[in-house]
Image (cartoon, rainbow, N blue to C red):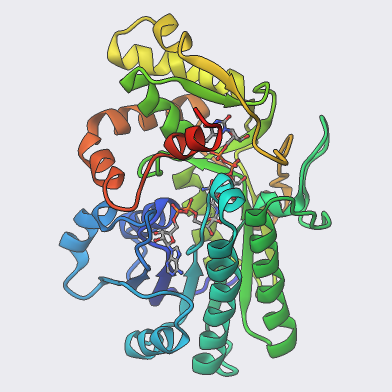
Length: 360
Ligand code: NAD
Ligand code: DAU
């Protein structure tokens, strides 16, 4: 298996949750000697503070943040030419399902039109070069919803069911179309639910941790029986690194934690972990649990098979859920300044919007 060199990388959405963890992961690798330009529009979900240390350590030439919208093809072309970009790792997206139900327009604009604009920029700058790579970061939600058994495979037919997953499915199709039609060198990954540091507290795990600390209710949608597969974010970063280095152009890999949890069980478990850290009784947090109106069209179960990436590229998740949740709780408790910084500006925790929707 030949190993691809990674020299000048454009990471889109690098000020968000997974993108910032990915950039931190690359710079932590002794065998990574390249440069990274982080292209981010800095929406409510993008926070340059998430990479303050990286900017301090590598800002002299190996790292820079450019505040640019991926829909701005000319802006992307300028950055690609200026940096001699040979690799694009595309994270930028509107990523929250509930927000997509309230306001789908931004999802179509960034996730579909934005991906199209990036592909056009890559095609214009790279022409027919074959020493380049466009990696598209996608989601297992494109496959729809599972019953109580079975797993999503790379061959599973797409069946997206929310505006978010439909927009991600469209972007996946565009990326594959540019490979087949224009021979653009692309790879794709479809990953399950990530958790870890720097995740915006609109998503289940950080939302619950912060609500516990503030004594606010823990809103469990529907009956709490929906199932998600959880992966620690650094494991997702290592999967993408592995794909970038070794995957064949045109290939797709599913990535997941092989770690399924019912939402209610997960929140109860989290109550115990937070209690261990704060010294409070777990019952104090568990008493905050409330079943609330379900998410419209709520997908029942996601579970991906990682058999292909395990077999072909030798990747496997490393961090156990116990370790990952424990260090995530510890991280939030010791980074309340970061939490405060994302609560300002355009950002509002999802629960506030949700209460408005329910008239609460
Ligand atoms: P996030 O919402 O935390 O971050 C998204 C980032 O993209 C933000 O920094 C935001 O400012 C930026 N952005 C948004 N619109 C932009 C635009 N038009 N131009 C430039 N930048 C823009 O998202 P995340 O959770 O880190 O997810 C990253 C990617 O991974 C997304 O493509 C998402 O679909 C995918 N994904 C996420 C998960 C998960 O569990 N979070 C799982 C699988 C796949
Ligand atoms: O599967 C990958 C996807 O995982 C990514 O593509 C998305 O970007 C990411 O946001 C995530 O989507 P989910 O909708 O699964 O994540 P979320 O954290 O919003 O919700 C996880 C589960 O918890 C889901 O079944 C809904 C439920 N939930 C969520 C919130 C925010 C609650 O019960 N209460 C809540 O307050």
